[in-house]
Amino acid sequence: MTDELGILDLLTVHGFDPHCRSKLIRHQDKRYDIATLIRDGWMDLYQAHQARDIFGDCDFIVTFIGDGGTRAKFLRVYRVLRGRPRTAADGPDDSPFTDWRDQTGYFYDLEYQPQYADLEGRVVIEWGSGALAWHQYMKNKLVIEIFPPGRALQQFSDYLDFTLSHQELQELISNPAAHRDWHSSLSAVAGVYLILAETTGEQYVGSAYGLSGIWGRWQQYAANGHGNNKLLEQIIKNNPAYPKAFRYSVLQVLPKSTKDSEVRRWESQYKVKLGSRATGLNAN
Image 1 (spheres, rainbow, N blue to C red):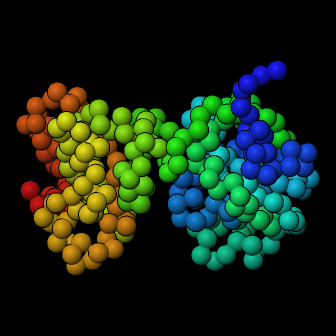
Image 2: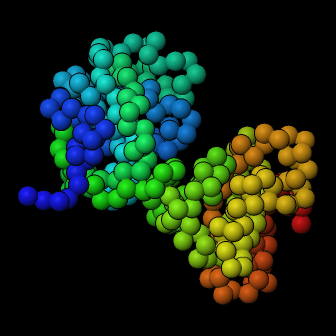
């Protein structure tokens, strides 16, 4: 007898049939950035394409994404309606991934199950030592964490190991309780950061210091897109949609005890290195 909560226990409470034919799927693919697939709306199509008949003997699949180490974060549940050899028409022309259109394999019609929506992005399980076994028949794997509602990002891992879209930044800042690992990490340090406009390639280098660290500075960008920078403010005034193309990353981490002048010195160094004054978005 155990009082540990498993993923099957949690799904069953929400109406999942524990006796159905089902698989657990953990997406962590070196060929594709899974977070980008989700952000850009390609995740369902990516999952529907398989090189082999992976889901043919399933009624349902329960999908996760890798969350660092052997952790896996719950994404969605799908009913498997049918599978068949895929055709070129299964990879639409506007798909950024030509191998979905050009290579042989299987295609599955998958029906999203909305009754588990309140668990999506919040439940983390221990996948176990067989991380390479990305599809497994249903097991009651241990639930190791349940985040509060509003969780949008994967677990924080390292200051130099992420970029955030503007939408992700807004979701992060608006839900600090659900992202307490991000909140505590970004609030704990000063530093130099980069904003990249993906549509133009233009760059803005900025610095963050003070009691709330990088988190406090990025709150301003989440609120208005320009962070009260005069040049960015003017650009956004002319094109309100411009911040949707922003990606935020950290270039240099510094202790919050670092003098403001020293943080600004590092900021100036990066402006020179990246040429953000000459060809980017820095006016000074």
